[in-house]
Image (tube, rainbow over all chains, first blue to last red; front, side, top):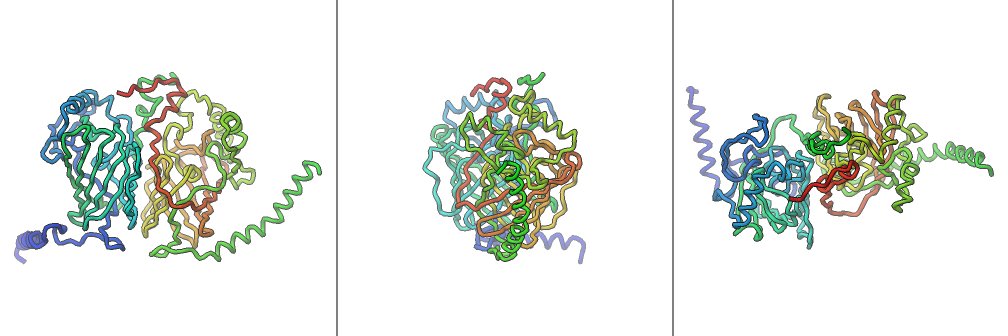
Length: 270
Length: 279
């Protein structure tokens, strides 16, 4: 083989596959994993590859973190929000800006509380999906959060319920898993930049395979109390493929300095 | 009949009945042909919780240690004595560790510092085996791993069955690292890599980072799992000891969110720390 021809052949092959796969199918001609019931099998360990989203779901410049550790500086990043900007009502934009100014005190992540949905999805920690035909569990390394997603035709309980992680009910739309999430509290944020919602937030998430090791994650956010219209975010979830990968723990609420009684202001047992 | 005489009779009855009980146990276990998963494992999926009347307040003397709470609060007294070996039902501490456990017990209602306050009351993870006698769980099974979802504080465990190597000793986890295998109808799980921050109960029964646990989850009938954990820690105990929990099957139920850190005021109250302002 002439040096270089292998490279060219690969390019041709990839472009042929890409053009041959009709819209709505996975790219690259790869078969996606499927369970015994024929549905796409989302099982595995996944993670976003987008350090910036945890800091801000809108576009942002690189900046020092709001504490003094420079290796934890904020990376420049493109936002996840379609159209670039979250359609806040005027009062809510003011509140977001206040949140931003006071984020070191107000961000629920500072206490390592349950981060809510969709924030948990793009925190820089892996999560494991376990799937049966009627139930999908999502186990997160971050504060061992769990989501129970029922795919059994059941509807949301009537409520009112205010849960940190909401109540999740899903159905299949072709090969896409569509999850309705409701019954949130008003405590969780979208990111470390103060973006927030009310207890009336409703989410519609869509998980679809881009190829066997990549999921497209889309989420539509509705909250008539805070936003002028529904808005959408999307990002990709990548399969963690290291042979020794497994979920470990990030129990930061138990860290000295975060746990109540060990914080600087607590002055216990001194 | 004198009290002493009665006790002797009981002991005698226990000795006489023990072999028959053990034999019954054995045959029931071998006769039982459990439903199987697609890949041939005994199918233990479903919803379970303990039937042993164990209180996480105290695994050695729950009835006595909790007597004050029961008399004040009117809770149900729980009589479970989970430790089956040594036969006296007590943790075989080394002398230094017995002293420390005694100190934990003495201060557990009014701890001088947070580090001697029950970690679960502080909303930290329960660890193994405490989570097993804490509340209800759902078990899911896959060819390469078993997942245990606990409602209490959304604990979960992933028990790998695929023979992957264990984590290096230097990694320490609240819930440890679990590797399982099936021996007949018994799921045998080695749980290692524990940190030294979890307790077995509220009164402060403790272990070190060197703890190793072998769990045996024996599927003895459609609705019963007999769980025995052998707990070894040469730094703290004089011998390995065993704790038994009988698990019974529950009706299918959705697990609710149980966010314990988020509203937790236990440490605030215990140490007079003012509650945080809301906004």
